Amino acid sequence: MVKQSNSSNLTSLTKALNAPSSRADRAQGFGIAQAEAVLLAPSRRTGYNSPVPPVSQAIRVKVLFFGRLKELTGHAEDIAEFSDAATIEQLFGLYSARYPELAKYRSSVVASRNQEFAAWDTPIRGGDEVAFLPPVSGG
Image 1: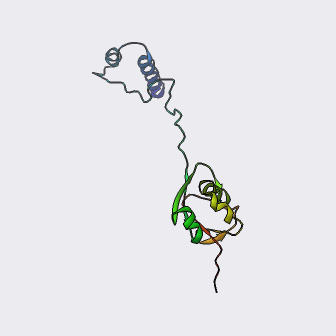
Image 2: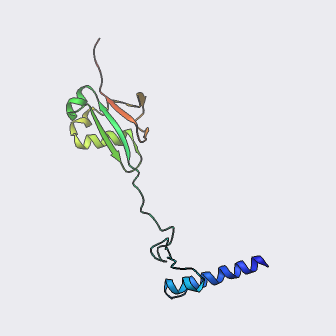
Image 3: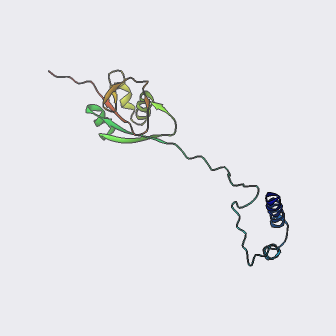
């Protein structure tokens, strides 16, 4: 019986709070002095779990250039950002587009990811360090 009366009171309270009357009228009807209703969501259409715009998941990698490649790019290291997954080949393509002279070295350049030699189709992950090494001659 207690559950029914509590449930009944809760239902009445909910109906009264949802009725189109002033906050003061609703509060006094239940013996509450100066109650202030607080909305959790700005409107009923927005809802509590309204969609949030997606956050860009940019992949940032440190890129190192050695030897002749460093001379062609004008710097020994750079930071590259991608919005999608990429491979070492795509990263080299990005820099070849910026520095067309790099493309001539593609067949002889060796790549590494996180200080280990890597194939050109190796995927790049955020925080990786990718290095491009030109052929070395000497004795």
